[in-house]
Every structure is written in structure tokens, then in C-alpha cells.
Length: 128
Image (tube, rainbow, N blue to C red; front, top):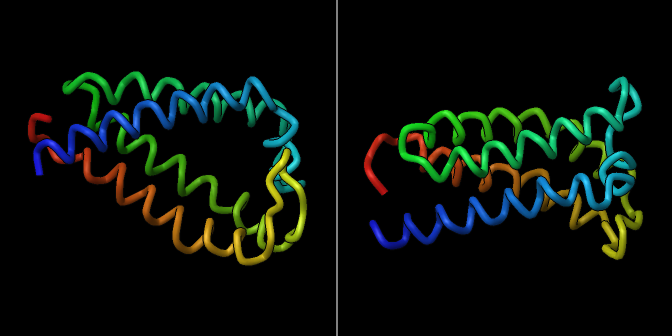
């Protein structure tokens, strides 16, 4: 299990580095899915990307790993309205990806909880 947890941590760090950078590389894809009742969607997108990058870096270090994992869990919970909007708006194109109602539902009820659980796994204070 120890080796699996190390591999999972590396994947989590790399995934959030890529996801965070993508907020700056392709901001319109993210701004498009922010619900209209949130003010300043461009600023929210940049903040989300910045947080994802910061949490990815903080995951690397054992002393900050728990804080980063908790931050990721809170961030993923904060993203739930975005996924609800995706369900409501489906089908639509998100860059080159066609988001069908099925894909939107899977993201909301399967992927988000799994990502939250994955981050939660690193809130335990054991050494990785």
C-alpha cells in the first residue's frame, strides 16, 4: 500500500499542476462553465488555477501535505456548482470535448467524490 500511495501522490501532484496551469492556458473553457450567479468569473478562474498550482506544490512536502489535501477537498466541494451547471447545460462543447449529459453526471456524482476521497487519503499524517 505504501508504494501505491506514493504513486497516487505523484499522480495527484502532476494532475493538479497540469489542471492549474490549464486555467491560465485556456481560461475561456473554464469561464464558460462558471455559473452566471458568481461574480467576476475571469478572476475566479485565475484564483482556481492558482490554488490548484499551490496545492500541488504543497502536496510534495510532508509538513504541508495535510493542509494541501484539505484545501483540495474544500476546492472540489466549492466546484460542485460548476458541475451542476454542466449537467444543466449538457450537451455542449468544452474545448474539443463534447460534454454529454452522461459525462456531466459522471463528473458530478462519480468523479468529484472520487477526487475528494483521493485527496482525503493524504490527510492522514503517515509518511509517504
